[in-house]
Amino acid sequence: MEKKTLFDKIWDDHVVKQVEKGPDVLFIDKHFIHEVTSPVAFLGLEQRGASVLFPEKTIATPDHNVPTVDQEKTIKDKLSRMQVDRLRDNCSRHGIELHDLGSAHHGIVHVIGPELGVTQPGMTIVCGDSHTSTHGAFGAIAFGIGTSEVEMVLATQCIMQTKAKKMRITVDGQIGPGITSKDIILYVIAQISSSGGTGYFIEYAGSAITSLSMEARMTICNMSIEMGARGGLIAPDQTTFDYLKGKRYSPKGEEWDHAVAKWQDLHTDEGAEFDVEYHFAAEDIEPMITYGTNPGMGVKVRGNIPTGTDLEGSNKKSYIKALDYMGFQPGESLRGKKIDYVFVGSCTNGRIEDLRAVAEFVKGKQKAENITAWIVPGSKEVEKLAHEEGLVAILEEAGFKLRQPGCSACLAMNDDKIPSGKYAVSTSNRNFEGRQGPGSRTLLASPLTVAAVAITGEITDPRDLLLIEEEYGVR
Image (cartoon, rainbow, N blue to C red; front, side, top):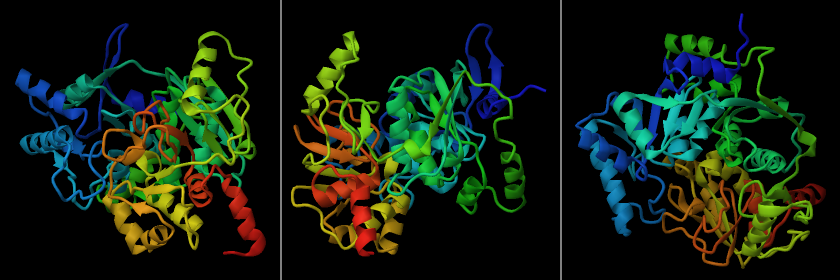
């Protein structure tokens, strides 16, 4: 009997047709859409006189360029308002479920899908957004698609795709205090580079991975794309099942038992082969932070920026250009570097677990005067829980400004922009030039590192503050 990887099992189960010497025609179980990439796709349908084949398999929400202040008012930006209105019109016309601004389940598309139980093991999931890989945390094949592909899925519920190569990244061992899943993935990307996963679908495995919560697993899979991968996935287990049980769209009653029995078979067979394998020890991972203009340019917070002496040609030029943009020097230590903004949010770290961690860290403390601190829940559900659990009061007392759900300062498509030349330590997923606003300088880090930076006003290893508290019994 053929030994199959988890990726093979799901992919092969969804192939409608194999094109000789060409791509596979792949059936898509769930399609997420938002206001940025869907309008042109719907326009294409109209021009061809086509309709949405299975509207019940598509779910929509506006997230990328919506304001996170005064969402109940008319959107000021004309283009943003037009895109959101188009999404509303298209969903209404085609009978697509829309979680609009102000609704109970509005939020970032990759946050509300898992919250609602729409995302389930064994599925194929697409969205016109690269960070669709987030949903792979549930043992699903999830990847981003372009506008023409969005149109294709709306019209046929299928997509033509060449099957990716397979990579497995195993992280074994126990994760240390002050270290999060964000540090794990930033460490991995720094080790294999921002292009090291190009052409692959990555399965994450090992004791350090299986010990993570579902929200932490989503952070890992979310950033698979940042190493060039097509997507990432983690085999479902009891943690997955416990998270999904009772969700709005999760199976109920006997259907739940049948679903779990099927999901338990979703794992890589022993002896199945991958094209590439990497192994890392959790004990080698420390709090991480980026110093350049791609997520692969990362170092341990207690480390130094690489000198770049081993680089040549275009790699050397890119390295020098990145440091020049960031205002850093080769070999420089980042600890103690003054920061202007901190941002907690995005589809990477805007879940309730992230807000809980930051609130616990800053409880009873005050942010530094030089810091502007934004915290943006990934959904209305996260916002609701943050209020109910008293997190909002803690965060606001510490000087954080809580905003309404949306992609916010992850990208410069809305009002939440970092000013030119200013430094922001962010829990988001990309640190490209101008990603958070023209001329902005972004350093990616975990929620705990961001919390530490907010309190000290400078780049700080969160363990420094945690150790002080343990020693003196602060809490």
